[in-house]
Length: 69
Image (tube, rainbow, N blue to C red; front, side, top):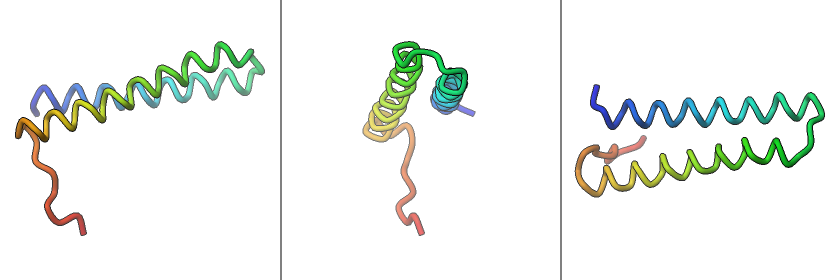
């Protein structure tokens, strides 16, 4: 497994962890400022995944599926 795939999987895990941390705070009734920190972090990781995949496709490190059906 290439290093790029490991980095993408790790970023996906960070996205899910941040999402569930915000969910936990929402159920506890914490202020929205604390919860928005985790949701902002989730957004940052999602954008990083998207940009990393675009760069990897542009450089030819990964190839998209030509027929997605």
